[in-house]
Amino acid sequence: MKLNCDLGESFGVWNMGQDSAIMPYIDMANIACGFHAADPLTIEQTLQLAIEHKVALGAHPSYPDLVGFGRRSMQCSADEVRAMLFYQVSALSGMAQVYGAQLSYIKPHGALYNDMMRSDALMDTVMQTVAQFSEKLELVIQATEKNDHYREKAEDHDIGLQFEAFADRAYDDEGLLLPRSEAGAVFHETATILDRVKRLAEEGVLLSASGKKILLAPDTLCVHGDNPQSIALVQDIRRVLDGL
Image (cartoon, rainbow, N blue to C red; front, side, top):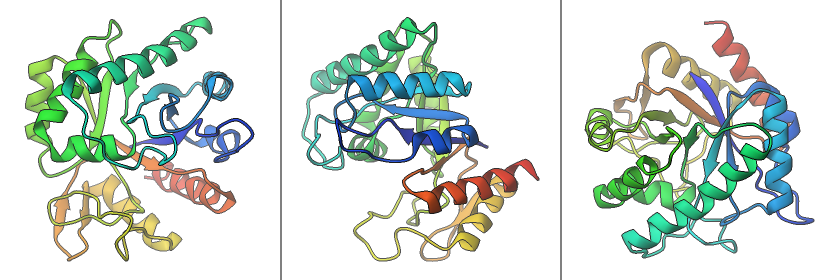
């Protein structure tokens, strides 16, 4: 499994995450595009850092919700969703091209990501939009037991998918993430997380909050670089995956 991380989420003088510390250990950089976090200078610096470490570049667009960090759902029309994705991804793509680099995928952020996993209509809009970019961009979506359903949709839109899992998050019986507001939604113990990483890599499965075995078969694992403890965890995850 490749490791992906949400990056470039600082804004002005406010610093978020430890991007330079985590970049050597990941394969994919999901770079904020300004709607939930980031500013032009932060985006430029994050791109340069990812290029330096030869990490795949991905756009991390969201609803226009800077105050809520993109974690609040919005009732947007299909035209609005398409336009906001065009705007954010095109800005990041253009900045990458200045440095001779190219985006390879799109991973929606926060509420937009969660909403598209619960709405086929929104997922269709996102897929259709991804297909319209001149670059051959893949779409990162959450791995669930409905992977085949989404593969068929992606084939209809002629785009590639990468399925993503979260070793530090609890799942419901349908293979969707439990809301962060619920007790037990996030795991913090290193041993528990590493055990889940190994199980995902070797078997492609996780247990839901109720104990049900969920087949996810992910291509990539989302990790975090918010603090020194999370950096140490990512280092441990990297060692586990490299040792398999």
